[in-house]
Each structure stands twice: as structure tokens, then as C-alpha cells.
Image 1: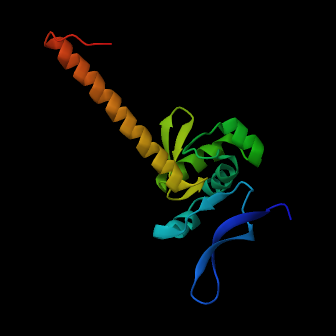
Image 2: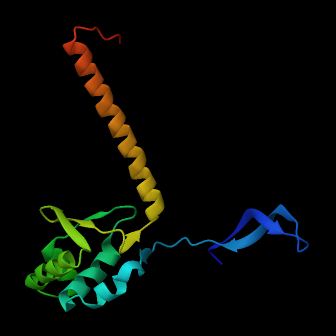
Length: 157
């Protein structure tokens, strides 16, 4: 079986003891999108217009790994789904009203990761948190340099 791998893990000896052992285990290797049913998401999805449901399915298949934004080209979506461009526009409005997507730039939409996500949401948010910390450090460093320069202090390089 393609997805069967040997792995090391803690294994019970059946008498209350645990030891590090080796065993065969299945590991998911195919790409998938997780759809989250928490917080009434199922009800929200069921209330979408038919155009919104069409676009939602298209998004599920076209969202890239570990990304929370997607480019929605109405002509491409219309061609892929067999609907008219106006229907894609109605689908976009339906998903926006349901807070599943939000426009971030022309033709680019933020995907609400509380509805669905391709990859690990936890890993994605941890990566973002690490980036935010680094950006704060850069901003603080830049601000410190500016203040030092304003006060006539020299900066050693």
C-alpha cells in the first residue's frame, strides 16, 4: 500500500509499561482540504445560493496549500464550472455575505480559514505569528535607529 510507512512511536506493552517501538502505520499523503463544521458553518453553507455553492466547490478544488487568499478570475471560474460570468459574480456576493470570503484586492479574496483550509491551520497561524514577531522587531529596530539619529547619536555598523 502506497501510504503505509514504518514509524517510531510509543507503544504500550499491555502491562502498563510504555516503550519506544516501531510499527506500521498509515500516513495521509494525498492533498486534501479540511472543511470545518464548527460554529454553525454547516448551516451557513446550506443557506448559500446555488451560485455560492458552485463557487464554494470550485474554491475547495483550487485553493493552494497553506494559503488563505485566492485569485478568482470570473471567466476562468465560469469556464471551469460551466456557468455564466454573472453567476460567478453572484456566487462571490453570496460567499462574501456568509463571511466565507472577503475581497482583499481586485480579483483576490481572503478565505476564512474557520470554514476551510488546505494544509494545517495551526502550522499556518504559527508561521504567521512568527512573521508578525519578526516584523515587529524590524519596525522597533527601525524606530530605534530613527530616534538615535534624531538625537545625534551615531550608529555602529
